[in-house]
Length: 114
Image 1 (tube, rainbow, N blue to C red):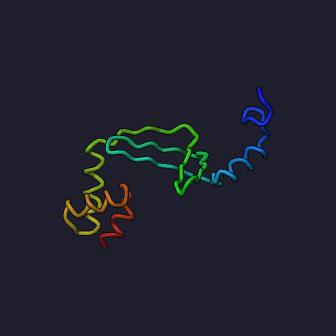
Image 2 (cartoon, rainbow, N blue to C red):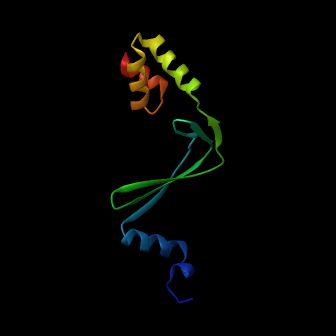
Image 3 (tube, rainbow, N blue to C red):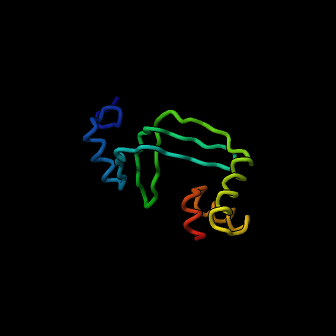
């Protein structure tokens, strides 16, 4: 392998090279939980390690850990909508829209509609 190539660089040299290229990497400390929700599943990472890489104005998050994967069937969404409707007195359509805008965060949806 030729000297100076990434395979032979130490961490300090690698960090300097990345800074020159405009790439910044940092860890987020003390992460308690990361939740990724789709329309059908929920991925919950407890005690995850999260790293942010910023390059060309874009941020990329890397999550390391073992997620607990749960199904999010229509029943769960229906329960969430019902809870928001009960707490706010708004229509199911308004509750559904607020949940979508808050990425399924029930408390935030309730506050948004209150």
